[in-house]
Length: 86
Image 1: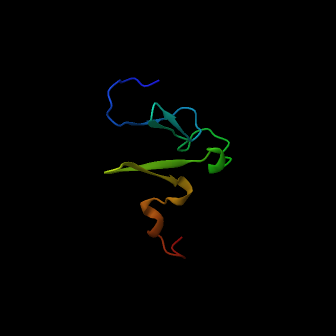
Image 2: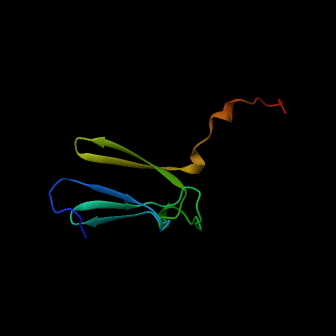
Image 3: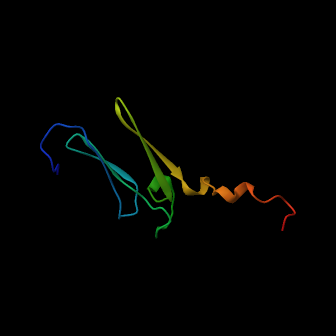
């Protein structure tokens, strides 16, 4: 169901079901997000069940979407300790 009847392009991002899926609804792309540390069996990207953040940038052709796995990110303290510092 498309809520607006005008022809402007739209992309929709939503969460809650903890499974990553994309849908085409009325010619518009809908993204259902997976988890960002929430409850999930984490069976992997192939099943849409993985912890991630989504990075969206805009191009002249529309949004470019990249999903970044949380286990690939490190906080700023990663380089603050040297081996043997205790």
